[in-house]
Amino acid sequence: MSSKSLTTLFILTALATSLSGCGPRFPEAYGIYAREGRDLTEFEMVNDKPVEKWYSFDDDVEIIFYHPSVKEFGARTLFGVTMEEALPLALLTHVRSHVRYEKSRDQSIRITNVQPEGSDVVLKKVAVQYIPVEGNPEILIVSPREPLEKGFYAFGKMRNNPIKFAIGVDDNPDERRKYRGCVDSYFTRKGFTFESDFKPCEALDKENEAWREEAIRALNEGADSGDLDDAYAKAERSLAVNPEDEELKDLFHNTFAEGVRAAIEAEHFKTAKTRANRILELIPNDEEATRLLAEIETLHKAKR
Image (cartoon, rainbow, N blue to C red; front, side, top):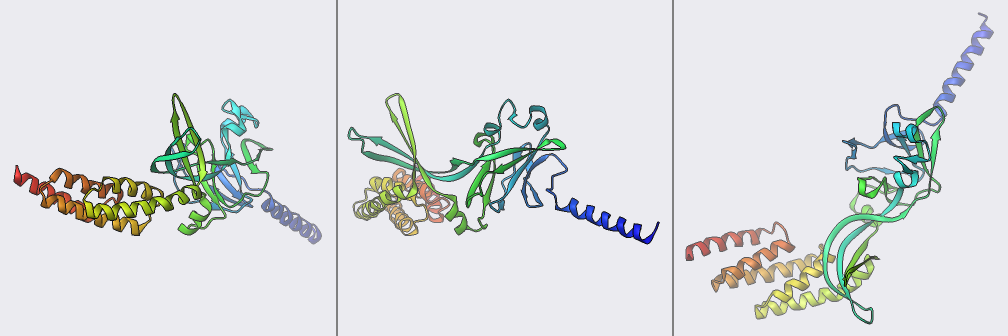
């Protein structure tokens, strides 16, 4: 072979190698993957359920779904339903608390209870394209029609343990809080029907400003009068909205711990136990409350 032919062969081989490395990359094994350019990240699964793990991608990420069912059902339906139903992509928001309320005749709302929630719900569905892959009918590309905004997302049905990941969010508490979103779930029963709604957390935060003042006043009054039932109810409601309110937690702890000691001194052991347990309800693992419960049990046994 002439030197000219060898040179031509070398150039063609190098060109083919270069072109093969520039095309889109696909996985070699079944699974669900995130693709950024030519980088593939496999979502870890155990028994067909996603492993809870931190994933964060750029706004142009695509999802690669590699499964034999794609070939079986085709690229428009999956498991007998449309792709939009089977493999949705959604922007999530965080449900901070579950609020029970009553509506009066004038439609004003009276909140009766607040409990921590901590789940995620769909804020809005994301428009995507479901693109089949020529040459491999078992692979489907799920490609957002627009760049994804910063936040947290779910791929798959919410009731079926979807894969969750972040877009443009760093793995630190401040970033997570900033982009996670926050709503409160409002729920009421009216006769035989139920009403539920989601509202931004700012609405309940504004309400809680007044509740916090009420809780502080009730705790201070309870410390003087010894009647702590109202103080507990108001502190519980306020701390359900803001469990990180250390000032209110300290006041609650000190007031109820003093109430426990007063009840022990008066040999009202049932009241003392109730108050110690209430500390643990709002401040789990509180060492003083745990120690006081042990002391109450010892003293109560000695009196029997």
